[in-house]
Length: 346
Ligand SMILES: NC(=O)c1ccc[n+]([C@@H]2O[C@H](COP(=O)([O-])OP(=O)(O)OC[C@H]3O[C@@H](n4cnc5c(N)ncnc54)[C@H](OP(=O)(O)O)[C@@H]3O)[C@@H](O)[C@H]2O)c1
Image (cartoon, rainbow, N blue to C red):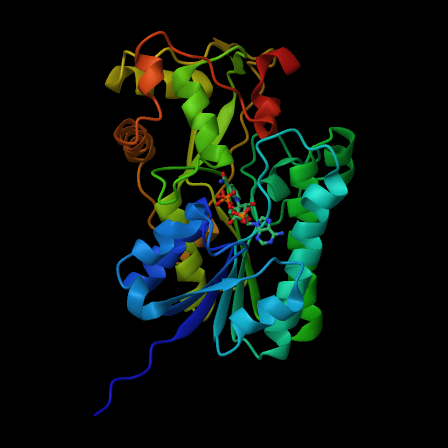
């Protein structure tokens, strides 16, 4: 009997931090993967074809999410699509419309329209807890769940452009699915840490590197929600494979305050400089965590925070990203995306 053909799926933005782990996972599970990248010849995407099984089962397609024809070529023949591509800028956003809004929102719509026309069975869209978190009307202390949406007006007022873009993109994706009979599920990861497969440092890894190396800005002692990049990949595949999955899924399994995280890191690696941490003004107000119960009920089993943090440091040590921190501790920068954690901004 001839073997069954591999199920074929597409991953947008395949060379990025989260997507690279997803491509690796899909290949290891026997999927044939079409990964879109903006420049297949860029060395920053070279790691993809080095993944186990890539030679036989991975094809790269050149596609910007604003180019529907290029997206269609990548999606053709796929039963599922993981829409991961979206800008996560570490630098200050100068023009929110062109830098984040259009690629996040119009890019998502383009992917969904292509999926509808190609009769794709299921689309998993990567959103963010940025589209959950900023809701001043949510009762203090009550864990935030999938019914909690960030207040777009508040995000605009605070110039949280990334959050505005992710919130509108996720709303648009779910609405599009409802209206057009397309099976769309979203996953909202919190801050993603863990080892990288891609050679360049992405924005969330840059934050952890800043925490370890230290630099000019002190950080606030606030609640950080952290998920392992490998667990995000697991979550994306889980919601794809589970027939019953629907709506949004928060993936924010671990939380810790900045100071406590620093203590945990210092215990294992005492010799780095580490960022300075200031106590919060509203120290005594109740902390409102975010719940991942819906995803866990689907069968998601994320790892412990300590493993994520220690594996991250081991990766940075192996790649010598932290090398200069062991000597004089050369300063690096707090990515602009995380200015909300900057104590000076309080
Ligand atoms: N890392 C986190 O802490 C975190 C947390 C929550 C949610 N997320 C979400 O997870 C997803 C992946 O983020 P990441 O952390 O893996 O960041 P990343 O490594 O910077 O990946 C972002 C990817 O999006 C692609 N992209 C950006 N604009 C594009 C466009 N116009 N057309 C096509 N591709 C485009 C990038 O391609 P190029 O390489 O060509 O620029 C890159 O592959 C994003 O949707 C992000 O919002 C991340």
